[in-house]
Length: 257
Image (cartoon, rainbow, N blue to C red; front, side, top):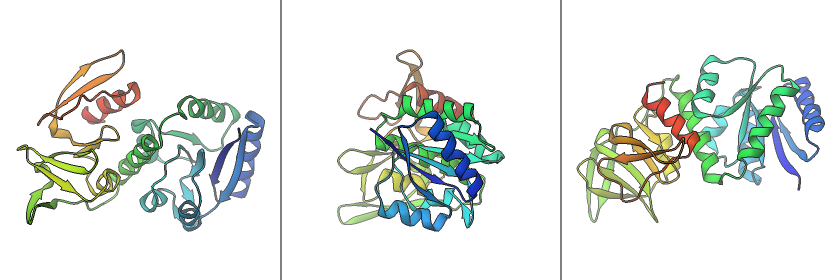
């Protein structure tokens, strides 16, 4: 079965070079679209089923490709491409997102594709989380405005709540905000939408169900080899076990890296 991929690259020479390298390495990968601008990319992702894999150059002819992630929720793995971008590379290393440095060589592309095939079984939500993670890391370097308070509903009443008073947001059948005092409020926003609204220095996404105030993390304990269990305060109603990859990422974040 062919692996469908889309290439976002505004330099024709670089695009053609990548297509040739892909063909040499793996004939089961089919390039179904090649796009050169942010605007065209947003339109394409909004109107087409997302591919199995995306190669995304950071700098396109009309802007930065991270702007695509601000407009579209992409549920496919992305391999970023850059000539050199200090902030972006730091973000990629922190989140575990794969990237390729220009000029792309066969060995680096092979390694990136090996990681893709190893991890491609991840559910779509996992890729969405990782893609939002890298966007937030990039936005740390920009002057972004984040929500400082929410107006939370309970029955017919509404309560203004500072963002720092929220311990975590979680998804059950609905999305809820749990305050540090234990009070619970339902929300209309999805966790992905909330993650984009909130300062990533204060809240982090642990998994598909949880967006957590860093200060609400009470303890990390080893579970299986390389994996961590997370204890929150106030206590979450279910056990929280992280994958080895997510465990490494969380330790870096909590260590201020």
